[in-house]
Image 1 (cartoon, rainbow, N blue to C red):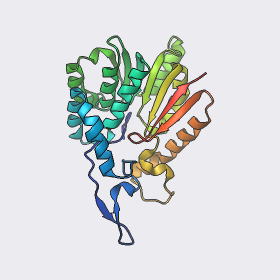
Image 2 (image 1 turned 90 degrees about the horizontal axis):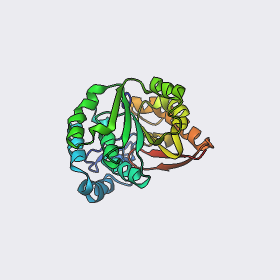
Image 3 (image 1 turned 90 degrees about the vertical axis):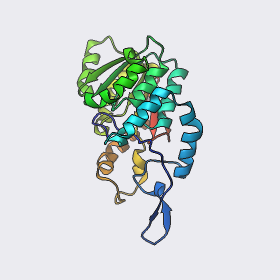
Length: 261
């Protein structure tokens, strides 16, 4: 879970079996807290090997493999989600974007590769050390000039941008993969910064599948802690008349919000 950025891991999932309380064998994907939301790990692996990996740009592959060795690799954006973000930005002709929660920069690189040469990304994370893991690969890919990285909490930066007045409605796309307990606070600010017709993407909105789990279901501590914040966000987005929304079962769940007024 990123201090300002946590997402689904993109490990090479192999379907495994675990023993249930009644002695039956169940696949690991059925357990609360597992990342894959598909019917089986094998099906997810099929998507990666058939559609994602063959088309993954070499810099993204290199960064994915480097990040897999990081002790916090669970925080990385999945390869299928990176592919989705890359295509989405091309479809909407995004040029001015923002990313809150960077980690080693896999989704950031996916964005930078999709933008035109004069495109810009305001990227924020409280941990520059993690960002610098991926920075040499981003530089080698020739897209580092598109990125304005700011180390530190995002909320004060957003507040200053709103106070300045000149950033209102200027962003084509904003991706949030950060501290889940602040998602509502981010949304209150980002809705003013994204343009009408622009998109905000909130990551982890299915939160390991825990959003539909019973309150007493076994969960990892961090999953249980942030679960209520994710549920609060999902409810708020569904009720917000300023946006149209679409919740997608990509990665750990991503909700796209299109500002309409």
